[in-house]
Image 1 (cartoon, rainbow, N blue to C red):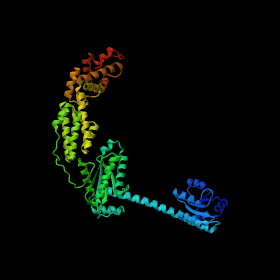
Image 2 (cartoon, helix red, strand yellow):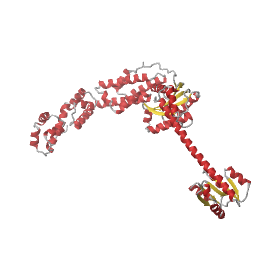
Image 3 (tube, rainbow, N blue to C red):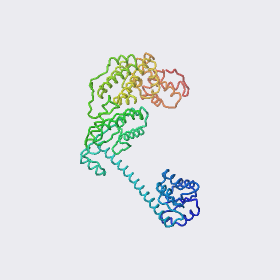
Image 4 (cartoon, rainbow, N blue to C red):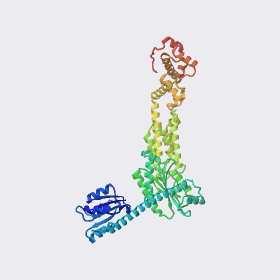
Length: 539
């Protein structure tokens, strides 16, 4: 332990330091200060366990020092020394939890007793601190163990029979009564919202779970609380004991929805299960997740399990495909998107929008887009092979927001491409660039058509109309042009040059070469000289 002696009388400091058997009390370091300012400096540097201090000093009293120490929350035991036994001194000292109050000239035995008392108090408080830390660790560890139990139970890692559940509870030394009944609260946020806002998923999950658990339990408590991600959705699940005030739970759910919108900029939806026995929690979680998957019209609300859903149009609704066909052929992107959005919002307001209806609408709309592309001889399945198309299509049925993101994207992509294609020069130029970059590969007319998303027949038609050539002839021209350069500027054999130019058959290479140049490859090299450069018109 460490002790600080504070007195403006150097003789008192000398007597205390040299005549007390400090080691007997477990004190091994002694510091001294002759005024309060110096004492504060020493305390800040290294907090002592015991302070023995004169009350009356010229530059600040010992009572001022104990007040300062208590305000700073330093854990120090005080013994006061004074020449005058005044009641107000003693009462103030005791009010600030001083251990002893000794008058001068002091009796050595009384000082020793006071130090013994202070040292014992220091030791006791240190033991209490250790026990407190152990208790905190134990409580925290127990909370993690209990959370692990509920996670395993809800995710079907524990077989849902009472005897299996009781064995797990016993094995984990938990105090959970299997006769109790529970409610399950599930809070859901669609992952596409999180992605749209550029949240880091780990940071978002932490913020979402802390906010939810604090609202439900009054503080971030996780022993009966799980956070997880499934099918790109963020979920928080809380296990609530039966008998809880359901009005209070609904109010807390409304707070979660409001605060998620305010602070996370995301729309949360809360689902409250019916009362269930412990072995039924896993199946209830699956049911709530399925309800969430099918819920389109009531996002951002509190939904009680079993609550009647007024979906009169389930599976029977279809969009006005004739109207959308006309809008696509007009190329009116804005009207297409706004018309679809208005219709979806109307269905939502009237509670006529469920997952089945959503699925029908998506496929009706896709059929319109495919029909539009087909009539323009564009290969839709290739146009929408990009990762963005795939991802938006997959998420489209999650929410109205996701459906509109997908519909807007494919509308823009389809109409923009048709507009570009109708400027035939741009499409043909794309095809020519593709050939110029890939002639050395085994490319075909189909490969070129795929690159520009057209059917091979339609591309051949517009390519011939603009260039006066067939695509296969243009490919061969590019290959022969490259072969001529190699024949003149390299030592490579004719067979190697054929391969480098995109021909896998030397006989065919020679035939095509002579047809275009009038010479065989050998004759061309011999006639023009090995290193002579050539000029040629780029097609």
